[in-house]
Every structure is written in structure tokens, then in C-alpha cells.
Length: 186
Ligand code: CDP
Ligand code: MG
Image (cartoon, rainbow, N blue to C red; front, side, top):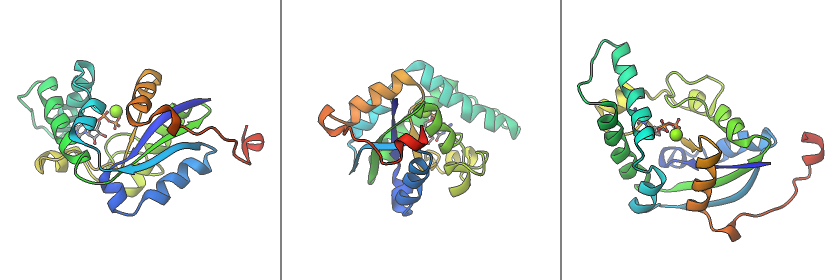
């Protein structure tokens, strides 16, 4: 069984979506093995969204592609755009309450990302959390100088999930228990 990190971002918490979000993971047979609420410090968020070139480039390329699709050519490089998004994220995530969870289950990293949906709510699958609970877009977020409000963060791969769980939780906060339906689900 695999573990992944999920954050319900301040927009999700303040919109009263905590229960809705958690129930989607639980209904899929995924188990919450750690959970807490906090207003994270800027320092914690800046370690979470680390100053990593590959990630900055990938985040910047999402903004660039969406602008180009509308015929707007951005002059900044992907890395520069990524840095802009990163500083918006640090300010935003540390601005209010966040629910932080470790979720366990069969291939939970992939399963959770599928239930969460792709980054931009406007174009995310309509049955996903992001696609069904928001319509926010790159264009609107960029013109308001804020990150996309897409309710959730979910780890991208195994290495990131392990590092993110270590960043947000101590070993003693990760609880091992059996769910009553585990033998039926698996
Ligand atoms: O969260 P996800 O893994 O889907 O996307 P990411 O590329 O790792 O970006 C992290 C977060 O940055 C996203 O969830 C958005 O909130 C925000 N973002 C943004 O506001 N504008 C972009 N061009 C790219 C990302
Ligand atoms: Mg990501």
C-alpha cells in the first residue's frame, strides 16, 4: 500500500468543502492515515513548493500554453513564470487554514490525482474534485495576480509523496489501523 499527501487549500476549507473532498477519497476505498488543520508558515509552504527548476519550468509552461491558446504570447521564460506562480502560492497557502492529510491505499498517488483532476478547474474532468467544484482558469488567476484556486494539492509521484509526508507530518502522527471494509475493497 502506498501513501500520498493531500492538502485542502484555503479556498476548499473556507468554502466548506472539507467533508465533500474527504468523502470522495473514502468512498474509493482510500484510507486517511493522518489528518490535521493548520495555517502553514511561509517557510513551510516554501519548502513544500521548493525552488526546483524542473517544477518551475513545468508550472510556467502550463501558464504559457494556456495564454498561447488564446493568442497571447508571454515574454517571460517558463522559469520566470514558474517563479511568479511559486511566490503567489507561498503567499496564498500561508494566508488561511489548510487541511493536511496522508492518504493510503492501492496506488494511492495515481488514484488520488485521478479523483482530484487536472490543474485547471475550467478544463478538468467534470467528475473530478477540481472539475466539479470550481471553474477557475489560468487566465482569471493570472489577471488577478493569484494562484489558481483548485481546492486541493496532491503529490505527483512516489519520491515527492514521501518527501511531502515527511515535511508535513512526524512519524508518530501517521496512524496504522484497519478499515472495516478492507477485506471487501481489496
Ligand atoms: O497541483 P498540480 O500538481 O495539479 O499543479 P502544479 O503544476 O504542481 O502547480 C501547483 C499549483 O500552482 C497548482 O495547483 C495551481 O494552484 C498553481 N498554478 C497556477 O496558479 N498557475 C500555473 N500556471 C500553474 C500552477
Ligand atoms: Mg504539483
